[in-house]
Length: 614
Image (cartoon, rainbow, N blue to C red):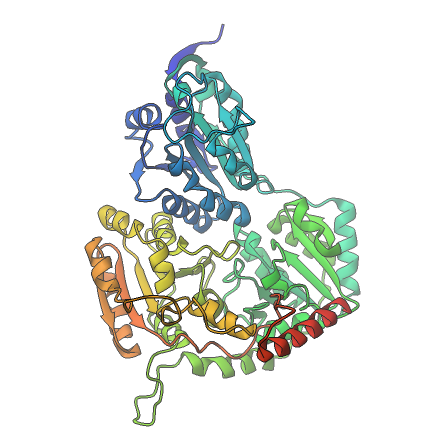
């Protein structure tokens, strides 16, 4: 007869979390973010207190952003470790839905444990309970179903015996990886059960490396051999698979140029001759020119998002073949791609072995030289002569200042607004892990919490977060958490007084400037947000600078500052990098009283027609 131990369901869950290990013996779950409330404070709170010496519990200030910190942690560590996040029922739980969606889009592991209603329905309805008039099994947590890779509701303690292994299979599986939601009924958390001791024995979760099917591999090899102008599109899966070295070896051996998505950027060093840089809507001319001509596109670990493909207009060679090398079957067959379901590292190595000494002509060196010749001047410090008309710095100049202050251990990050596009085009990442962009969901509010998560993942990294004033206002409360915990990173707030990126998109699609910049929004009093005072009030070291020179001086001091360091600089909301990019399908109104809108609609229709004929 097997030995058992009597534990509450919450205690059993916490003990199980602590026993799940990575291949190097470290706990897979690094810790638990928690905001306690009714629904998790009594059961899960008590269980976490009992394990506080071995499983850290961190207190956040917002359920969404503490989940963002957990997700950034997993992303920076290439999915090798993860964190758990627990909340109360009701609004505490639904606050995490946006974070779950972000993790789902980006295929990143996070364990979400919201409290739930009473399984016994005794006090039904409880405080914060959502009542469905037609379905008694529904609770607020059902909103997690479409944004979870695995969802379960724990309504009896013994259900953990099946739910938890399923949860970890999902969290650690390269193809199914994503958010797991275990909605934990609050009465069940406190109920005891005799759990088998064997359930809590240490378990090592090995990284599965899927080998390609032989027939799929042979078809891919034949297609590559038949090509004359191949190109690689490196996505986030290159990082998650630890395949950057394999990508470098494949590219050099067969002389195939590499382009990088937002998630794939930094897979190769920016100055490698075969790294043609960013691709797509926020891409550079070098990469996009090669992609337009390519007759063979090898996507490695990419979802082929519309920003990558220019809404599927970028690959314009009518004789092109697209091969999608990906762990997820869902991603391998997009747009008629030739599937190659495989781990990125294994797939690249086996492709290379089968290709033997096959080698292509190198891309023209002038492609990169011409691109940097155009954009490097944009990141230079502004001239100081009296003829200089640049009253406010541009975002490109801010990037240049940070670039000059960066080093090999710097990791820059962002998620939404102007900076993702500018950084994708302009940032020169020296090595893998130096560029952290959440652009799958492009979620405003990820930045500050994400920077904290990156620093927790790699404490020796010099983490610099780019955020605009709009995103700062969206979610800034984890600044106080970072200050409290002494987590050091730098936040550069570019204040363009509104949503500058979307204002430019509004103008570019024929719209009048409306409701984006603060000056175009309804207000009785002018906005007087003091970001320095606000950040300082949460415990950050903060200052405002008025020029690129002052920004560089402020950046030079960041290593001496403990905790979050915030530098605020006013920027011009209108300029953006005029070079690079490609078409992006943003629907323009078919009917308008404004002549400008009608002209842009005509151009839009022509572009749609052109795409359909390719």
